[in-house]
Image (cartoon, rainbow, N blue to C red):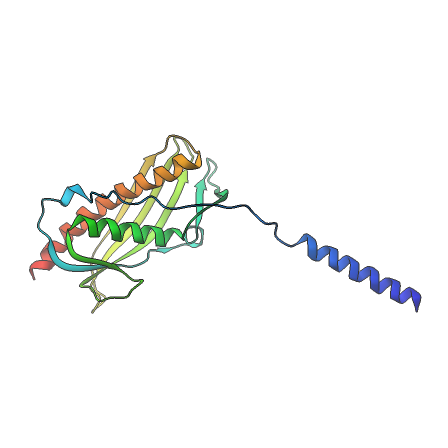
Length: 208
């Protein structure tokens, strides 16, 4: 009887030890806000008349690696890693959605710009797939953003037009402060291209 009790106690102790070793260790996190769009808006369309259309920017679709708040890094041997102990304040697709919405609204190119967060009616939807949203360290360190964009009729779900954007913006170093700044500059480059394209594609629709 004593032997059985001793064995049971030993088994319980081993299970307890095993449970302790598999618990995740707490990780000190530094949370970074994403850079904001320039307050002056997009100068490329400042002299153009406003289109009488409303645009809704839907949250970009993204794969698992880019759907969360981690700051992703691609190494020279094509490994996908992330900065340890560093996170964005929100998942990457949401950060990009909000940046685009604020920048396009400030540009004055359209009558209104909203997002799918509020699900308001809009004449046209901007649907996107976020293919890459990363720091690439193969060669010169640079921020890489690849986005597939579609302008969609919300009633018929017909795609008016689609286009793929690829932005690569070099960073001064891989220090997190320089990387965060580089993300802002790369996203602003992307926004300028997206805005020009969106305006060109929606101008004929606005005349219908």
